[in-house]
View 1 (cartoon, rainbow, N blue to C red):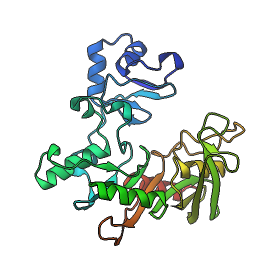
View 2: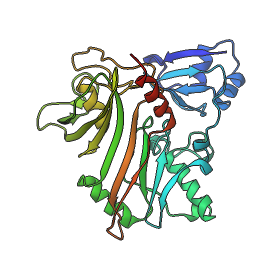
View 3: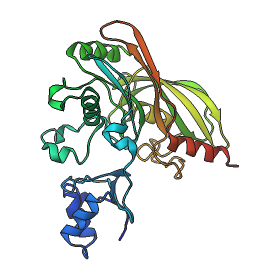
View 4: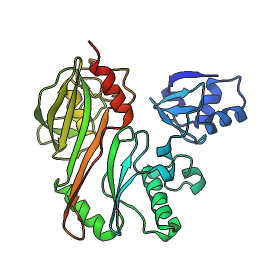
Length: 320
């Protein structure tokens, strides 16, 4: 039993995932539907979902797979890579498909339900507890100072003290944190900096660049690392850190990131060229650096491209 990618229409928005699947597959019982979800066969926007009570949203894409998705090492607490840990901060490697933090609407969920869709914040706390041989409730809470998109992989820092939260928050606000991303885009790009005022709605319902002095000022410095037959590998240095900044700037420059599903149209409604063979959004937070909140010492980490993006890069290098 399979269900091809199905977009949630407006009239189905707000129903539970189980109900949506039950109506799409009327020959399946409620228990069969719940078993499919529990057995890791249901995707929402290419991300695994184990929560049958999750409310679906208009425009989301629901897919029922023929075979269950195997558990990856990275999805287990023991497999989470901690790059640095002390009493003030923790730096970790985030895999694609994992939310950095929980949506505010999910904060009241019971722990059992949260465990069905853990966030990077949840798994990091569990990994720290495991390493320190403590229970989670014995640890100071993790404080959010930045985040990266669900489909983006890369380095993330959490604060573990109020002092660190204030200090790091100030650095992010002043744009003194080093944040460099790797991106694979369609077409041939040239090195340059992109500057614009980003707004929530540029006129077509999407975030994007608006009129001068309206919205938030955003600057991305882009360097070509490798020109490929039909693509370009880029290094993107954030001067500012606005929501979806790199994705928007590259799309509006006419070169959406491979695997992009949101920013694929120009302001006049034309669909931009992208690569449907990409395994996911080809964006990776490769470098993170900042002043340590207590020692005032600059610290930096780098993370190479994950294997899925390496394989994709090898394939497109061979294209004519």
